[in-house]
Image (cartoon, rainbow, N blue to C red):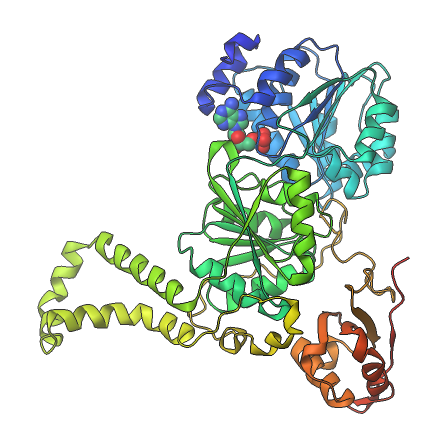
Length: 583
Ligand code: AMP
């Protein structure tokens, strides 16, 4: 099937052709003819990366009355990044259509500018729900002529707490409008929206429910918790050409992993809700233009990312909500490309892999974190390949040639090769020499292998020379928190610890944190010293500025609590108690 067979206007076909789209993707083939009719509600279950934007964007543009300069369509998206992506795509599709004006409005940016833009007029509004509600309440969004509302990534908007905003928008828009809902997953709340606000919607499912792209290889690696970071480094090092996304659960972890990688010279930056919009835009722009090789992101912040050629998605931690795995992994393997989705897990997470396999109807393969030799070999031959294909600026080089030859005259050809290779390669050899196997051998060893972890890796030696230290700052610009993807750390300061401890562990709350000059390692040492226990009985630690949560094995929990209560840190009497389980 071709685009022209779908019944689109010639101006749109021209735009599509210029974009290089040759044949419609399955979701486009199914959705476009249905939507062009203009009389249908629609529920489409399709993964990210399947061509959803054109699936609703082309019929929406086709139906837009170019002679009527009032908002006719609203497209709602969970994040500003996705909203901007949609607006850009729509502008590209409609390049040859006269009289189409698209305005995007989103939280975290100056509302007055957006009000002015809306007042100047448009026929399509792309918005994040929170900001649109603000604009509706201020009476600047004219909804009286809205013919259709498109909910993109509806499941994610609901996950992010936009339920009330969506309800308000759907209630405020004319009753006879059409609603087109796109979602990767059919969560209960999505079904609720469909049944409350749609009449007899057409249903399209591309691939089976929740199914991920067939082009993605899913692998998992089992390591001890404290070896997550060295494992991540090895996965990156063993894929020298990687252009990847690293997902962490919280903003804090995201920034921490990015900072550690940056400090060790990796080309990386962080994207999360604590960054201002400008910082996020700058980071995204760098990533899109491949100025950085790796992007560490929270689930929410990464929602809008449609960057071509992402080779790997690495799950530094599996998402809390398993369905997010679909979204994360869908960032690679887009538009027919191949991709890999690599999950670093601990023994305790193994059951989640089975659940994801079931939900996504896909199979994971268990892989092992490569050993140091393999990493070195790969890096060495990458370096040799680079040397072979290096372009030489002949004229510049000629000036120095004689002197260079003279300086190197004492070396044989082999020695010169060795010297040049060693210059870049010694750092890898040094780092990986005698490095341990960091693959977990399972819980049956009673966790003892935790102590055997790769100390060299853990030491985080800086072997890359610290390139690209532009870390984009951390200012805490206010704005629409929800639009900025502020999900990860919600509930900070709540003594219940947000999340219960894993089985076999209890969580202890202590009133010391990073402002007390402690890091996680320092806190472990402090616990071991005061409670006379070994580090291996300690599990995950979540550290805030003024307090921390420490997971400890059940059997040692009373002893640790007793040791910590009333102990003294820097002259301050410490308070410790078991954290209340999540309600
Ligand atoms: P989307 O799911 O809309 O985010 O699209 C994913 C990617 O596929 C984007 O980079 C689109 O530009 C690209 N794409 C969408 N439709 C087509 C098509 N028919 N042919 C080729 N590429 C497409």
